[in-house]
Image 1 (cartoon, rainbow, N blue to C red):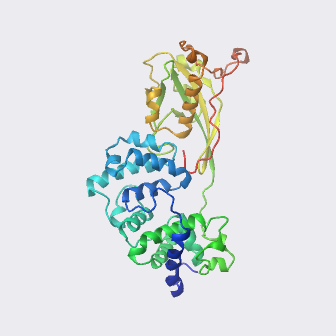
Image 2: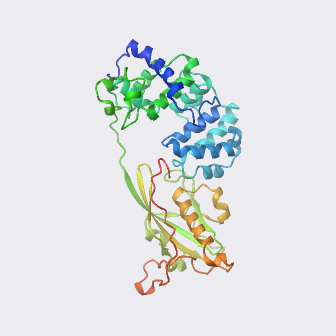
Image 3: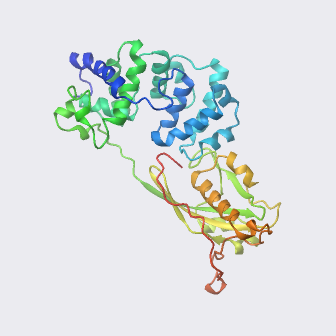
Amino acid sequence: MSADAVLSASVVREFARRLLAWHPIHGRSDLPWQGSRDPYRVWLSEIMLQQTQVVTVLGYYRRFMDRFPTVGDLAAAPLDEVLGLWSGLGYYSRARNLHRCAIEVVERFGGFPSTAEQLQSLPGIGPSTAAAIASFCFNERAAILDGNVKRVLARVLAFDGDVGTSAGHRQLLAHAQQLLPPADRMPVYSQAIMDLGATVCLPRQPQCGVCPLAGLCKAHRQDQVTHYPLKSRKIKRSSMRLWLLWAVRADGAVWLARRPESGIWGGLYCLPVYESSQALLQGLPERLRPTVQEQPAFLHALTHRDLHLHPMQVVVDGRRDRLGQGQWCKPSELPGLGLPAPVRKLLTVRAQALDQAPHRREGAAPAESDPGACASPVGAPPSARCSRPQAPLPIVHPRRVPGGA
């Protein structure tokens, strides 16, 4: 149908009825946030599920609920603790907005407001998230329009507007609003249409044979299901190379700097990041430059970008040495800090290697040089290379993390 066409009476009459009949038998019921009328639980799950798969979210959701059982607990927590729990889930602006939103919910409203309009005034809550909270928790007739729901509607209606544009989004939202059931059925309806998109109306292999809306679906009748939704704007995959200054002390402390809030790994503690090995070396005190050792590079795959990471390790013998903006962090402090997933893995693998080293098992003091490593100084000639066998290297194996960072 054209983007501005009027919906038929049969579609308006049957769409919600069929979804409401289908969901009690075939819909999902095993997710920890389902069936809740608690706006805090619904909000937390909706934010986590943005650009992130359910299977990834489950563990994070449970840990957040265990640590912050109410919005007041989350509001009272330090941001660093929130970022620490979020570490690995990606899109870290979500975590910062989550914390800001919790504070505003408590201070401005004394609890979550009950309308989609008020909810949208809070940090990090857009129209679809506001509609989810308002419909699930307060029975408001507000249409959710996340990616799964867009796909269901675009196919049933054979919607020829571009859902990737503001105009196409607005037109599809207007159609979605027309299809809503009475207010008292909104919680079940909202869950049903989201479940249908997530389990049946799939992007590449839709299960049309078991879909309750197949009889209404224009795309199905036209045998063009995978043609919809139309989206002209495609995000191109990119790659980036970064060099990480991995400065350690003999006591195990590592030098970390907080990342700017904008850009990759925003607001997290991280090994200092450079665009080249030359820039990294120039940022070090001159006496340390000859001792820098290049470790094996590794790949960390984000949703739309491949990061090629090059750790450059240097052992610092002075306890008061400073390496620009940042601070020394003891191993015991790392679990509570918000760290990028590849950096946390790198440090964790190294810590495990050190715990298993002979000098640790026998109680001997660590060597002055970098324990367990046998890399060569940057630019060293072959004759200067270390000849003793290398210990297991702290390689972070490539793994695609949906939405992760």
